Length: 270
Ligand code: ADP
Image 1 (tube, rainbow, N blue to C red):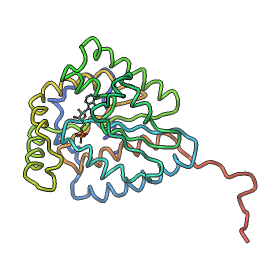
Image 2 (image 1 turned 120 degrees about the horizontal axis):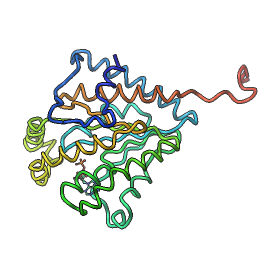
Image 3 (image 1 turned 45 degrees about the vertical axis):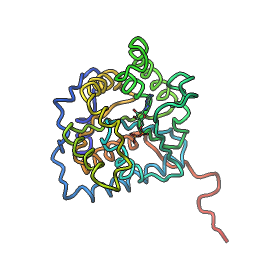
Image 4 (image 1 turned 30 degrees about the vertical axis):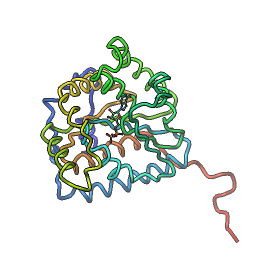
């Protein structure tokens, strides 16, 4: 079951995904009623697998979270990534670059936060912003951003070849769902801090963002660093899907606890 869901959400290299034809409300037959229990079981599994990653010397995991405003990056962090022991997990938010970051190549700030062996790094936004917001707002000329897809693929290939497993999630919501979520941010005092007037300008560029995402998904889903499109209008399904794919990815890393040191097994502590 898990394998089939993962397979269906995977962007196969060269598949040219059309976001308009992928339903953000899809749930692949999963039931809301059992979602909470299922998520709990997956969280327990994530915790176990991460413990092996932390204990051993078996590699590192990089998780990239991307999506339009209100797509649920924060919620995914809160509901799924909190299964990880914070000792071995870092979360980095990539916002508007600082002057120092802008003075370097765009991958410089990202590389500093890739995971050390034994750890998980989660990117809340990422180097993909450099072909998303940067492209939509023409922050650099087309000749510059258009070369970045290949550069990003080479960067990720380099990380993968050096022991980092990479998994990338695009949280796919509908335009109507975004309208409701933005409205809720305006109307709910506890959510208002999340709303900025600029969010409405970004919303006007919906089609441009979707085109930019389609190019990312088309060109940068590789064997070593796959993209998954997560239908994300339903938060419970989004959480389940991300958790299942993370479990499957960590499972595949074949993590095991390191062997006991010489003379330890059978020792009796007096
Ligand atoms: P979020 O919206 O994810 O909760 P912020 O409010 O800090 O977090 O938003 C981060 C902002 O930084 C987003 O508008 C995003 O487009 C912008 N950003 C991220 N990376 C870049 C970049 N490389 N160049 C320009 N803007 C960027």
